Structures are given as C-alpha cells and as structure tokens.
Length: 276
Image (cartoon, rainbow, N blue to C red):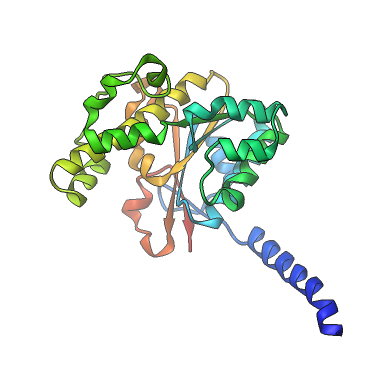
C-alpha cells in the first residue's frame, strides 16, 4: 500500500529530473569554421542578418528545445521579433490570429489549424510562448492540398485554381532553379517523371514560404523561421527564391546528427546544431 501511495509522486519526480537534465544538457553549436559557438552568438549575428532560418530535424527533441530558447533570447533583445513556421499553412493564418487575440479557444485552434502529429510536445511550447509574449506568428507553408496536386498532376495544374486559392501560394509562374543540389538530390532518389513533379511540389512550398516571409518582414525586425533542414540547407530551398538583396540578410542554422559531422557539412551553414 505504501508503494502504491508513493508511486505517483515518484513518477512525477522522475519526470522532473528527466526534464531538468534535458534542459541543462549541453547545446553543441558550431560555427561554419567548426569552432564552438552559442545561441548568444546567433543573436549577435542576427544584428546584420535578421532573416534567421532554423533548419530542424522534425522528430528531434533537442532541436525543439533550442528553438524555444533562441526565440526567448531574441525576444529579450528584439521585442519585435517575428516567428514564422513551416508547420502552419497560409490558409490558417486567420485561425492563428483569432487564437492569439483570445477570440477562439485553444481546443478550436488546434482542431482547425491542422496541427502536426507531434505538435503537442514539439511545437506547442513554441507557439504558446509566442502567444504569451505577443510575438506575431506567421503561417508560411503552402496548403498541402496544392503541393499534393502538383505532385500528382504537375506544375501546370496550378493554372486551374481560382484567385482565392492562388492567394495562399507563391505568385505564378514559378521560376525554379532545378540545378540546385537539393533539388538534384530528389531527381536521383526518384528518377523519371515523378522526380520532376516532386521537385515542382517542393519548389512550390519553398517559394510560398519565401514570399510569405518577405511579405511579413519589416526592416529593423528579426524574423525567425522554423522549417525542416531540407528547406534551408546550403542556403538553397526557400532562400533560392529570395531576391539577392535579401539573400545577403540570411542567417542559417542547420541541425545534423553527431555521426554526420564533417568540416564540409559544417561549412554549409552559418551555425550547426549537433544532436544525438
């Protein structure tokens, strides 16, 4: 009976210790030259390059914890920081705005914003921090139904959508640089017609995120964008759709696994987060 009585408390204590150990775990951050760095260095670098891309591994807990810490640091130094997220699609911006204005409940927001399956543990803390601190959250990704349509039917299918649908995606026609190494990797993985459609689908996502980032960025602000590492690695993907004057304002953080670390890979990003 004593064990049964104490068990809930022991479980909570174990969870607290696990959480505390994780939060205090060393953040391994390297600069492009392979030298040890810090999130404070990222914040300082953003003074000159305020379009900050955090390329994550979607299922890595450490990356999500670091994102939250970085957003907190930015908020202290730049109270007007803006947060953009690949995880929300442009047609749910109104739902986000209504929730941040306390017009709808958390339950309604999560039901209608099409949150990802790992939202509760990985993205909710980030979103709730933004809400509590009145940080604007921008939904940047193209609605997945349009990306899927391109993958199934090709890029020309976009011409058939009306103006309302097009308001949620990048301006057409898309000018896609298919020679980019990230897109060429797709062609190698999916030879034939499927690869062309996959590249077009990916480019629609990248171009839409680029357009909605710039649409919501103002001089003097820091814009922190959270996306899968694939969308910003080697400063391609989203960044390839920026005009040159904005490409010079980009700062990238890439997330890689410890066993993948090489000097060549570290050199492809301004900062690299190394995780287990």
